Image (cartoon, rainbow, N blue to C red; front, side, top):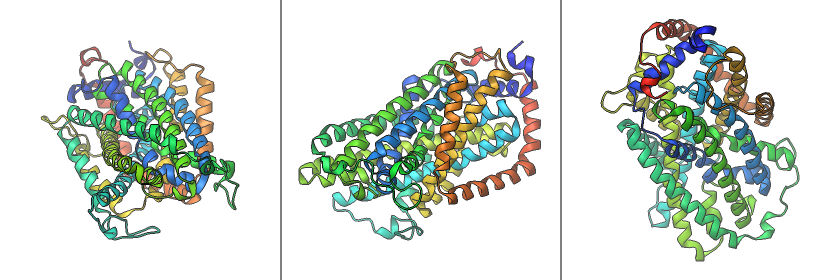
Length: 491
C-alpha cells in the first residue's frame, strides 16, 4: 500500500489526478532543458527589463544589486522546498496542490486563489513592460505610437488604453491554445535570443561604466521606510521578487514533463541560479552606465544604453528587440502557468468544469486560455505597472511561505512518501525561507496588504458558496475511481 493509502485521503486523490492529467495532456512535451528555459523565460522578464529601473531609482539606488542577491537567496531557499514537493507530487497544480496535500482544502483553495491573482497580474505586468519597449522600438524606426493608445487611463502619466499590452496578451494566448510542444519550441527560441542580447549588453556596457554613477552605492535614507538606505534595499528586494514567480511556473508543467520526478527539480534550481546571476550582472551594468535617478522609466535597459551616446545606437536597437521578444516569452510562460492551475483547480471541483476541459486535438485547456487572455489583457490595458508589481510580489511571497511550511508538514504526515529529491537540513532551510519571505512582505506598502485582504475575502466567499462542497465530492471520486497507474504515464 502507498504511503498515502496508509495515512489518508487527499494525497491519494492528488496523485491519482497527476496520473490522469499526464494521460490527457502531452506528457512528453518538456525535458529538463525546456523546463529550465521555461523558468528563465518567466524570471528574466519584466523584473530585468522594467522593474530593475524602478527599484534602483525609487528605493535602493546602485545597491539594487544587493536587493537582487537577497531576493535570489530567498528564492533559492524556497526552490529547494519546491523541488522536494515537485519530485514527490508531480502534479500541474503546483503550490495549490502542495497546500491541498499538506493542509487540506481550505488552505489549498486560499493559496490557489492567491495564485490566480499572482499569475494573472504577473502576465499583465509583463505585457505593460512589453508595450513600453515596443513603443521605443517603433520610434527608433520612425513609427510613432500615440501615447494615449499605449498607456493606462490611471497612474502618473495617464492615457486612454494600452493597446500593445492587450495585443501581446491575446497573441500569447493564441500561441498557447495551439499546443504545449509548439509553445515550448517558440519559447526556447525567444529565450535564447533574449539571453544572447543581454549577454551582449553586459559585455559591451561594462566598458561604458562610470564610477560616478555608482556613488553613493547606498544612497542615504530619506523620510519614511523603504526609500534608500538599508530599508530601501529590503523594499527593492520585495518589489523585484515578483519576477521569481517564474520557477513556480516550472512546477506547473509537471503533467507535461518527461520524467517529472527528475526534470522538475533540475528546472527549478537551474532557473534560480541562472536568473540571479543575470539580474546581478545586468543590474550592475545599468546602474554603472546611467545614474540611478534616471532609471525610473518604462524601458531602463534601453535608457542606459542610449545614455552611452550614438556609438551604441546599434546596441540600442538590439536591446529593444531583445525586450520585445523576451518579454513576449515571459507573458507566454506566465499565462501557461495560470491556465494549468485553473485546469487543476477545476478538476478538483474548486472551479467550474469548463476551466479544466482539454481539447482533444490541441491537448490544452482552451477555455482557461481564452479567459486568461481576455481578462489579463483587459487588466494590462487599464492598470498601471506599479500597482500590478506590488500585488504580485506579496502574492508570490505568501505562496512561498505556504510551500516552505508544506514541505515540513508533509515530511511528518507522509514519512514514507517517495522523495526522489530531499531538502538538505530541512528545518533550517524551511525556517530561513519562511522568515525571509515574511521580512520581504513586511517591506511592502500598506495599500498592497489591503488589496490582498480584499482579494482574500472575495476568495473566501467563493470557497464557502461553491468550492468547499464540490471539492470534497471530486476528491473522493478521484481517490476511488480506477485510472492509469503512475508507471503507465511516466511517473
